[in-house]
Image 1 (cartoon, rainbow, N blue to C red):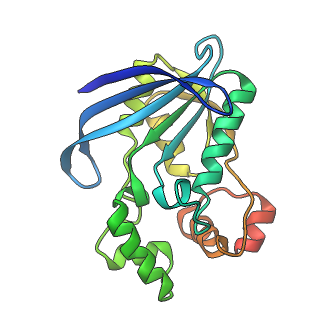
Image 2: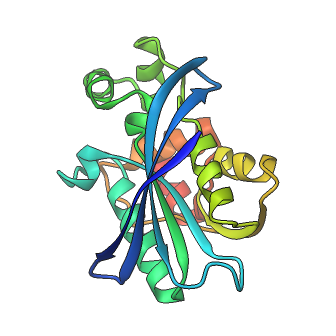
Length: 209
């Protein structure tokens, strides 16, 4: 089901990665629907001699392109690429699952509801979506294709940890994805911490709550 579309060199300000592009007809267990999905894998160095650093990251146009301060997505992307470059080896899996899987337009509708006082979860539910509609099966399939059997996972999200472990891939270490926070992200972080069980360091958790 998984098809590699391209394998190119991608020089970045952190390092020169191999950029692998993938497509798959994917069945989303949450929605019960099949659709063509795509994902990217930025690969650096030797990922087999020891467990590589891996980040599974979801696309965020508002944060990564327009540098919105409503979320921490752009800073987490920068953190992951910087950390992989510092270690000399690793994989960034970039999935096209905007707005926790509901898409850009629905995410912006959710933002409107947040401007009216709802939090991110309440807004998604009001629009008839799941709390988190993402599915990590495509990312797991890419890791398997790359013959990754153990890894160091950079995440604060327990669902990503569960997805990796349930696939049989061993997590030898969880690395924090904490990034600097501000007043604009306080409620967003609080919701992820209090309602989704995301791991946050003590300082971030305190200000978020």
